[in-house]
Image (cartoon, rainbow, N blue to C red; front, side):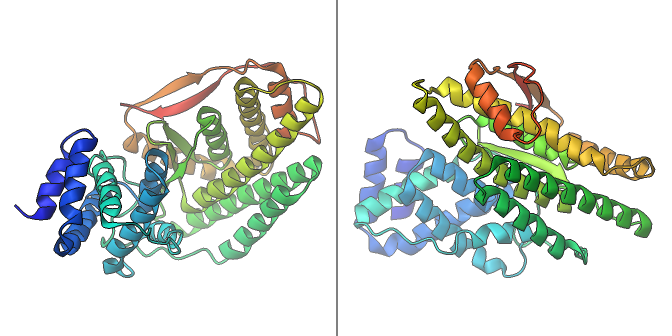
Length: 380
């Protein structure tokens, strides 16, 4: 049995720090084992890809469960492992790799380095199978021609959302976000009409979007609202802090852009709301923030759906309905077992009011009252 095999046997299949220290000591004392240790890490990553994981999923879990040094190690290992595939990587997979390009390898003594690496390998070795959202590295890729109007449209949408995030005026932020949603809806309709006219074989696909703590239940509801407004479906996996969004490719990109922007806008609005509450002599709590995010998600769901519906005319309904059926069917095939979980309602009236106000400053409606929400979750 090699040094690496002994170290992995001690660290991966035994519990406790003592077993981990034993494995790290073996590796630290044997520099000749470094190459085999690297290859074992790449094997673990390859197994993760085959089990449905993608680079962003792995890094997100490492960031949640371990420390920054492990995240840096994971980024370096992923970059090295995927070099062998060249261009045989799906676009979304390749885009995730680009986010890791500037990761710096940690500097540490051999024992500390070996300890961190074994801790990372232990996490990778225990990854379960999850629903795949694209071809694994090296697999044959389908050639899908890009829509000629897509880059310009997405550029406009990104510009609108960037302005919404940067402005200090809530009314302007809402107007810009609404315009972005309108463009997304029109973009989706254009793609649907083009596919219908050309009898395109285009079919739904899926992507995963991180739903990070804190207040992840409210954020999952927000993502679900954004997905539905853009003719997609979202299924939340609370165990691994992500939702799988199913839809046509153009709509999936819209969902990612809008959800990310709304999180930024919501965080800014929450900070202002808390500042105002403190200025009024009221202490803000976790309950206030939970109520804020719940109300923010609820109100934005109503508003985005209304904006999307405004651009749909009666003659478009048959074409859009067929795509909705395709998305629903694809979701059911990916997730034959899901549950709808009722989320605890908002209990802080101030947080609820401030959350709704953040979602709809320009044209405020009646608050309706605090309530819970629904999140579709992956079945066990």
